[in-house]
Amino acid sequence: MRVLVIPDIHLKPWIFDRAEKILNEGKAEKAVCLMDIPDDWDMEFRVELYRDTFDRAIAFAKTYPETLWCYGNHDVSYPWGKLETGYSPYAERTAISKLDELKDSLKNKSQITFIHRIDNVLFMHGGLTAEFISRLNPELLDADIDEVLNAVNSASDEYLWNDESPLWYRPQYKEADAFRKETYTQVVGHTPVDNIYEKNGFISTDVFSTYSDGRQIGESAMIIIDTETRKYDKIPVIGEFGYKVCTVTVDEEETT
Image 1 (cartoon, rainbow, N blue to C red):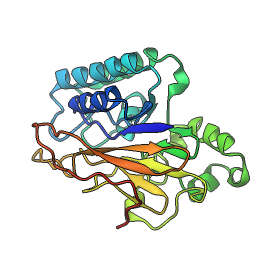
Image 2 (image 1 turned 180 degrees about the horizontal axis):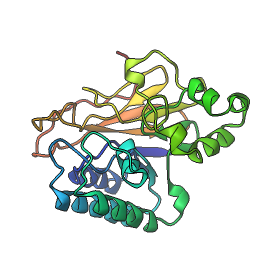
Image 3 (image 1 turned 90 degrees about the vertical axis):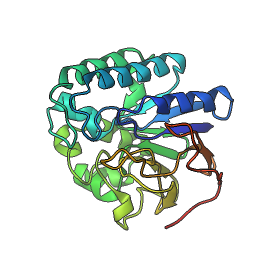
């Protein structure tokens, strides 16, 4: 299956417009969103932008009802009551109620969770390692993959709200391999990168995040990944202000 990956949103509803265009062109069969829908630099008072961004996500979910959603740390920080960089006490009620509305708009509640698997690809916000699985339950290290994912998706915030969890892990700064990377490739967001690339079994996609002055950190591109072969194409998209930051499409592994 060819799957479009929508990376971290962070109050940028226009990203869903770009994803919609790709899907409408028939380039992918479904989408997976790595979420982090709320929060961005100096946006704490922009409650209407929180509302509008969630509303755009909800509209997207209704238009493309097969879409899967992977919680990010910024999404769960509100219902979990965890302070987070960019956390808005002013938008707190909006973020919680709109996240519930997004969940209620889905055909099946299982469409929104921490990790999704489609064939040989795992989708999540941060990244999954054997070290985390060992902390959660060492017996899972040799368990069936779906049993492993069910355990992670059922874990409490005690396990998930830490730097080594699939919500927070940053493989871009470490040398650990993705969990069972010989069989499964992981597609992750969470950590801003200049370019989409693959390393140690992780494909990093968070290119739309910005510096504190509003400048986009990475290229303007999304990926479409074949979930059986694990190969991906990089699809250039129009940036927020109508220009292309990236003009190259690739389908082979990149390393840094």
